[in-house]
Image 1 (cartoon, helix red, strand yellow):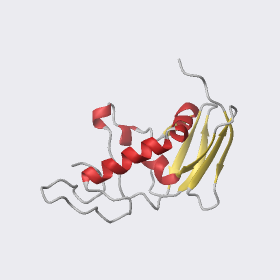
Image 2 (cartoon, helix red, strand yellow):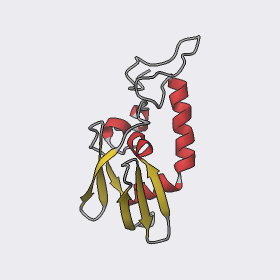
Image 3 (cartoon, rainbow, N blue to C red):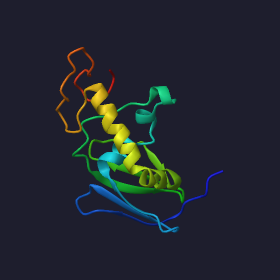
Length: 141
């Protein structure tokens, strides 16, 4: 069983593009809004199994509009693209901070594999032998 993580501070930056989280064990993380959006724990992003997980492109400019406490165990983030169904438990936020470099590298590789871009409305260059997406940034192909 994992150790319970308790935050001592959760603060949204003035530009609404970074969530700063500190934990009682000394862990401190500056989590970009784009990263939090594409790693959302929601079923919309994660699916109901690992095989259903979606890779979401076009979120480089996303901002966090609100941080809402959910009991004493999580926060719900509302993004300016209207996504608001992810509930970020303390342990998940801690893991996102601790594993940022690894998770971000995987995300960038997955975007490339699917022909998606981080920037909204821009697809990554397509491979000559097919691949890519439907152009909506959904990561469906």
